[in-house]
Length: 125
Image (cartoon, rainbow, N blue to C red; front, side, top):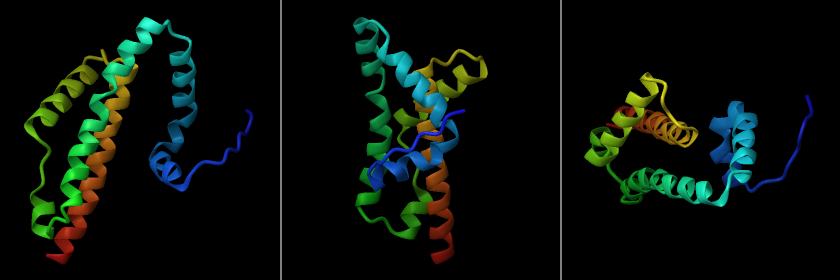
């Protein structure tokens, strides 16, 4: 197996850190994506627009500098919860597309981060 060393911005490195074990798989997906016909690419680009929305929701919450109590009480919007339930249902039935799997990974990462935030907030409360 070859080893690849690249230089990336620190912010990108931090975002990729939780995915480090999946980087080879994600790179393969990127290469597969680049080889798709342009019609399929535009459809996939449209599907990915939902991923930043859930990030935006969490960022909007955090930018308000919530109190520990607000962090402990935080829940995603009903729309985000519904989408998560759809993804989990597809995951159980093994019908997730690669883009949906990536989206589910986003939810999982955000959930992990919020669990850690809530644990710290609980300690301070």
